Image (cartoon, rainbow over all chains, first blue to last red; front, side, top):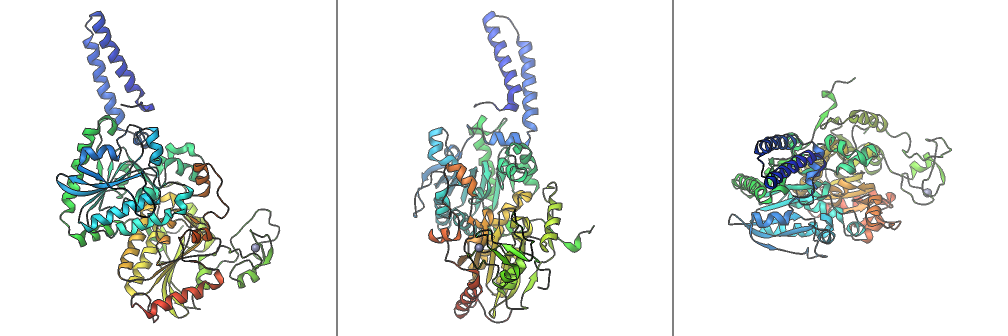
Length: 324
Length: 286
Ligand SMILES: [Zn+2]
């Protein structure tokens, strides 16, 4: 199940104890089932307590869990007949963005997702899931194709951000992101974006201008990573835990703020504990979102998406404020 | 536009011997110049060509024909959506410092007789960062231009997203870009002028989406910060990295335009569009 996180230690300890008692029972042929039963009860209670009230920082850690399922892990579990499509037709192919076509419950869809590696070698190849401009331009190419063939678009957000590199700037990182925001707002097909892990800054938003934004319970989505926020705001990256709270980056917080539409529950302990079961939970949410969006025609989808973003903002006028 | 104007150029360098407001020391060539003289030359150093950052009101005064500028949404101010500690105090301070209520001034006016809607960012207010108010005011001015069938010009000057508004600030990127998309679909003309600095979420949204993308000489323009890039790639970047000239060379800009020529170039674009499309730039009244 991957390396345990700091706050999971007490759970691991009880699990170890139960295993030890069971081994002892087998070896010595002594009946300790009463005690094992008690420990198992305690385990259930402790897991419920621990995972039931995760702090934002604990969720960030789960979102970063190395074994957490990625776009390419979910694709075979959610879709059939996936065909990956490479390249932006301008410069190259960015392995940090995966795109292609497939069927979702028999229906053609376009899939776009950010993709980190599942081991060190792959991580290097995929640039740790941080796209270059060609990644965003590949995504846009595939979105336009989806629009042409009236296919819904499903995007999976999972990135620490757009890559802060020399080549990325030279090739117009800003323009690539901006262009995606511009074009996505005008698409005439359903666009559903799912934040499955990390979602940082314009690098996440560049494939996230959807009719509906869904978020896994233990994922995060923010204008900047907690470390980046802490460094900028308090000149101390060590205050990331505080930033994770203050910046309101969890699905729960963003649902309250009206930024995202739906929170997708995770299996106990996080998606990595049972990717298959997790994909079923995502499937349910995607199916529901598609059913809702299917009621709209092309113009209505455009309009709904535009209004959704048009309404985001919190402001006042001086007359309405009591002056001190 | 009879509001408070900048009394001095907001550029403070340590070790500056001379009192501010009378003379200024060029941060680039260190030459000392009378502010009066500088002002006459649109705050451009006559010795080395350094373009001082301009406050929004100064910019409006420089671009629009006299007494034609009319401000929009002047009283719009930020709330504190995340209940971010100390945020409201910081806004208060910057209001007093700049005479602006937020980091962008919007309105309409005439440029050599051609009507245009405009948004001018001011880096003196919270580093020109984009939060809800900046996003809303820019969106509204685009919508206004759309309704009136006049062009819109946006002068960017921004450090990026307003951290204290979290995701609400990130979403302003989508909001402003979506407004430009509608405007564009209706044939509206949008001119983007990037001034020092245009970075982060502003660079990666409306600033890069002009039908024409211009920049002032020497302006810093880019998505990621220089230091972060250097840390990431482990090498020192060339000196001109992320300057307007660098972007021009890499195909990201139509032109780099010195401040002294800017108004005329804008008027020229407006006039060419006024000949062609009806929605693209009506030269007649607002
Ligand atoms: Zn100089």
